[in-house]
Image (cartoon, helix red, strand yellow):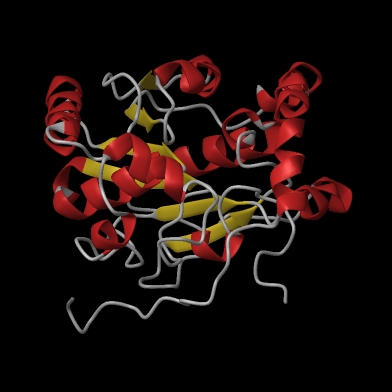
Length: 263
């Protein structure tokens, strides 16, 4: 492994069983979309550029339909990864993802933003590093890029579905290093699948940030506060990025989005 890679906290355990049990609240998060819809429609309008959304482990494009539909309502051209269920980077998966990104960029004539949920966010980050000229921005939702291989409650499922040893997989990529584009990691300290510390990115350059929301891991892709943050980040003018603003709404916004740097 290259000496320039960051040293991971090898003692970071996966989330507790209590947090894992709280994952059952995800349907209630999706249920909150309806009452939050008027506020969600007040998010900044999109400029029409293409957004590719990658699903999490053992999930398919079906799970990202709500988020993609919301982004479509704001004016973005949102698409799934079109590879069925995400069972890990098996043979041909990353190659197909590269082709999909190149085709999306060619057809629109513009750079593409990448959004990835959990393992899908790892794909998004690595694609942005490999093909920087094609990517405008990267947003991840509860993605485990900064923790050791077994700091999640899903590593056994990963090994079972992908047929690959997760510790060996980690040595193939420099996961903690951020892509060169504006990169946002949306995470929750009550994530029951991924240790939240494993979703914290360091300020590798002046356009990286972490946004904390109150959500479950399974609910991150259907959580209204996560949706607003995604919409806000996508609306940043290309070449004129600014960090996410947690203030406003008479102090309510700072409650919805806690300080990610607090101890």
